[in-house]
Amino acid sequence: MAALTDLTIAEAQAGLEKGEFSSKEITKAHISAIEEARELNAYVTETPERALADAEASDKRRAAGDVGALDGLPIAIKDLFCTKGVQSTASSHMLEGFVPPYESTVSGKLVDAGMVMLGKTNLDEFAMGSSNETSYFGPVINPWKRNSDDQPLVPGGSSGGSAAAVAARLCLAATGTDTGGSIRQPASFCGIVGMKPTYGRCSRWGIVAFASSLDQAGPMTRTVRDAAIMLQSMVGFDPKDTTSAEVPVPDFQAVLGQDIKGLKIGIPSEYRVEGTDPEILALWDQGIKWLEDAGAEAVEVSLPRTKYALPAYYIIAPAEASSNLARYDGMRYGLREDGDSLAEVYENTRAAGFGNEVRRRILMGTYVLSAGYYDAYYIKAQKVRKLIADEFSAAFEAVDAILTPAVPSAAFAHKEKSDDLLGMYLNDVMTVPASLAGLPGISVPAGLSSDGLPLGLQLITKAFDEETLFRVADVLEQSAGFTAQPGQKG
Amino acid sequence: MSVDKSTVARIAQLARIKVPEDDLDALADELSKIVGWVEQLDEVDTEGVAPMASTAEGTVLRQRDDIVTDGDCRDDVLSNAPETTNGYFVVPKVIE
Image 1 (tube, each protein chain N blue to C red):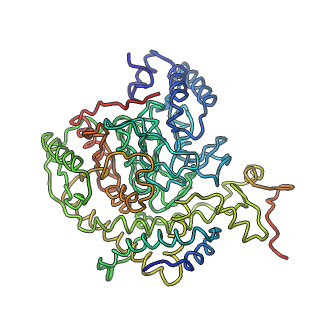
Image 2 (image 1 turned 90 degrees about the vertical axis):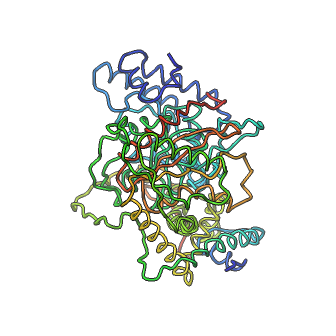
């Protein structure tokens, strides 16, 4: 049998059911793996004692015949989710030591489903970044290395700790959050599956807010089936989140294994973004061929305003962030720095608590919302957002899903892009359009670059059509047959 | 449009973040770069387009029953406060 840490969720479920191993055994295997791979810095907070207690409780439930959907499975939680009694930092000095007295809805649902919580994974500070280099707790190292050198690579971001942990076998699966690509881009960089559901599928309650009209939680796993299994336990209407969607939840696994004969797959030429790695464009062509070979019909679609999605995002997201992060004032929780006046306490606290990228985005957001610029930037961006969403709606009248690359490049080295602001922002050029439109998207590992690094392809469907998304992703995954594993594992 | 040093100082004050004088020039450069880049949106004709604040705009805001759903958890609320006394938050003096 494969090592316990190499199992998929589906395999681990089967093994636990058959009594081949206990939750305690698979949990211990993961705790050891985490200890051996600390140099990856994937976790901000490890919770081995909690995990063992969770596992023992799960084994008792199983003995009593009363198990939940994810019972006994060791899972990691991005440190953007508030977890009751466990430090929740958003990888910011501002929230260092913050111990929520409540549980986020999504992590609470996973607890109810019986998960074993291994710990809280590293991320870009307040989820702002595409390389996990903005974390106050240090960068995460991608378990993959390129063939050409031994440089440590970034895992992508913002859910970089989750992606690295899943890839390095430091958990069976992890939660992520995606505002402009923070699940899908790191998933591509680390060779795993990353899925962002439709905006409103997962409750945002208890997730540290970045840009509220865009933030959405999702699963990060090693297979499409695992993503479907895990998503099932994350979704559902929540009265605590006013944007939570009161819609029926389908059985996401039911569509797996169905063929895609006759489905129309949209191919938007606008995603042939200048500067995209030619290998990625070739992989995209290969992906089209795979889906055609499986009986789908590739159809050209036009999304002409795609190139404006990223600049619109970099107005909207910082604007919402500047408003959301106004709450960090040093009064009720979080860091407080002294000052001679109340205003100075605020200013000193926020100067000390926020890192450079967060500060830059708050200032950018404050600027575009300030008197005289509000209409020119913020309202303008919201109008462009509407046009982009309308273009997707029109496209989905003709096609069932859209296939694009997930990222414009493979993982890069630490500090390689940290001085190139706009170059860093370009990482999300393929993922941001669907975010603005609130659509579900999934990154599926589809191949390796010539330098030995994983590359993902992205599928997008219309809102609340995760079933078609999983159905096509499953076929894409089978066709790609991606079995490569990173060199550095736990 | 470029963002100058005094504008950075002004928005930093609006955002209540102390920015050291030494950082202002670099921030002005960075924000100018970002602002200059996002201004490509001016190429898009948005005449008559309604701004979209959220993709959940079709959702009707729900009203919940007017009953207490939370509360009686003072110690929880205070548990992460930088300073408390007798069940209250302690904040810096506001009125001279």
